[in-house]
Length: 187
Image (cartoon, rainbow, N blue to C red; front, side, top):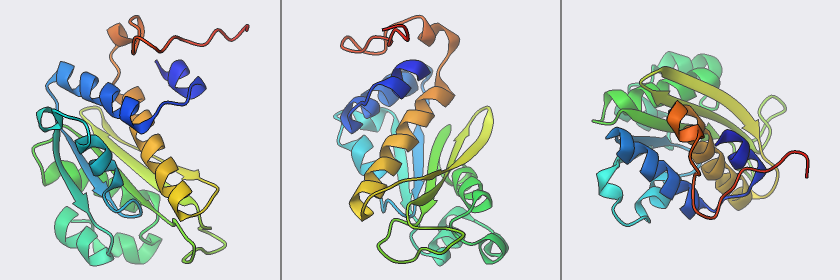
């Protein structure tokens, strides 16, 4: 599955459909904790009919106060590392699980622009956190484009990476979707 997702551009709707299938198969629920996307991941998920079967809740924690109040992100992490940082993204993901009934969480915090960037954290910098039963995973990405492009790329990456984290071995042997086929690297 991962190779297919890396080599084919999937629409947000298709990604949400795959996330839904994987979560429903496991009887898991998803929670989101979003800063720079302002709820776009939750909106994409709930655009899909039947999402109440697998989407539990979304936290829009745009301000630092919201991160601490709603997700219990330690204010000292924000003070020491900044809101756009690995420790904060990880704490947001863990906090989304702790403050929901979900088994899986996505967290994003970034600089979408057009302002707010710095040499250390330029516009387009986004930290991601994913919490699953296996633990918390995080990574940083740098996206090009205007505010809308950075936010849309964030949604796409958050969902794509979630799929690779919740994939079971038996999923790899099955086609992801009737219209999706693995890319032959020799072609």
